[in-house]
Image (cartoon, rainbow, N blue to C red; front, side, top):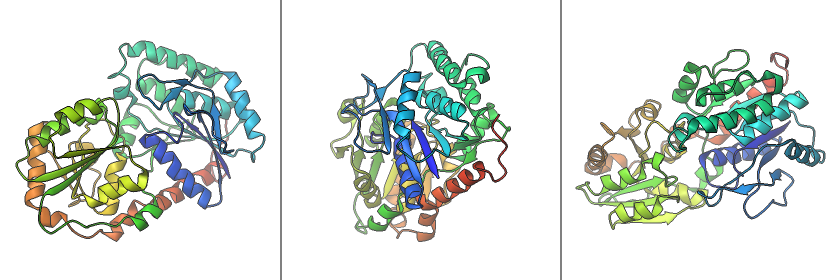
Length: 397
């Protein structure tokens, strides 16, 4: 089958949704399927690769590699022209919330294709917490949504869940990457056109990388090795993490992987024993996690899955979290959770890990690792695609 994926940002930019999309595609293609992406072009320009339909875009001033665009029919004509050289599209998969969603739903409506929507982000936090006048922003999104849905558009969205629910009502399937996010979406009316709640399919970890990245190498004694991986932005609570490091009494070493707007501030707050690597390739990032005793995820009430947690569990690294929703989805014995959101509480749980370091340094559990492999997640997705193509799916209206 041919799956047409609409993305928010180009798959070759940094971000959990982008990594998720690339991983899904790798294993879809391995299973014999065709995948084409539609996304804003990279800042460096379109790629010479027929799998990527790179649309003319504008730079996002605050994120140095991101771009954006205002959806128009001219963009869709370019998509149609590029697709004429590819096999016929079977399924539209929207992995976007903004311009990519507008394109995806309009394309599906015009071409009468089934549509699946993976919702990656907490728009209610990301938009409301970072945009000065979120109401105006949702009004703009409403204009895009009306252009996208046509006669199916009901009303201008007033908040994130109004907006997502209006798209979901036109989807055949909605995917959420965690149980807690699926529950939240469903409780706010984000359900499919048949009234079905979101299906949970987390993003996996690349099988091939798991085969070459081994666990261990740490000594039986010595400093606790901590890894932190992510975007250096406020919702990741990176400054709070750096403040907690100053309160830890035990000997530790810390490697922080990633980049972003708060990097300079984080470097000024962090103790001298912290190493900042910048952004790293996937395999190198996985190796940093595998060589650590503990992977810390310091964000709270923001992650819809938290891919670094899955990566840590897959390679056998203990996880420390502060988000109780994330903790509730993790296997017993594989994680520790801070008692509250304070820097003191995070330092306390890391001190506890340092005092019990022998227990943390154990071989990778292959049975647990297999649960997180992307090949198994892709097999679940292919089953959904097959159902959408005729095994009991209701006809498009």
